[in-house]
Image (cartoon, rainbow, N blue to C red):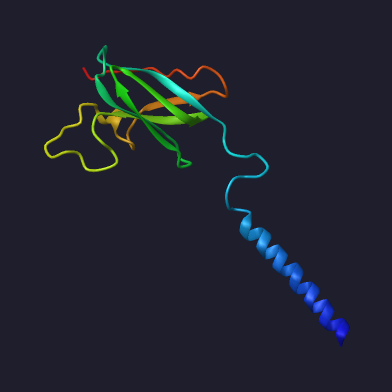
Length: 138
C-alpha cells in the first residue's frame, strides 16, 4: 500500500512539473533568443519638396510593434525600432485620440492612415538607419 501511495505522489509531482513548465513557456522574454535587438531610426520628411514643419512619424508592424516620433523642421528620430520590414505612417494630427474639433489632416491617407499607408522601411541589422520620405500630394 505504501508503495502505491509513493508511486501516485511521484506521478502527481511529474504531472504538476509538466503543467507548470508549459504554463510558463509563453510568458516574458524568450530565454533562448532574448529580447529583440533594436536600433535608432532617423531621417527627413518632405511634402511636395518642402520640409514638413511639424507632425509625427510612426513605425509599426503586424507583430504589435508601434513607435511614434515627433517631426520638427522636416526631421525626426525614433529610438528602439526592431530590425525588419516595418510600415510607416506620417501624419500631423494625433492618431491616439480624437483630433481637435474642426481639424483636418494635411497628409493624404496613402501616407497618414494606418490601414492605407504605402510607406515601408526595412531596418537593417546594425546597418544605416536613415529613412527619408518625400510625400507627393500634387
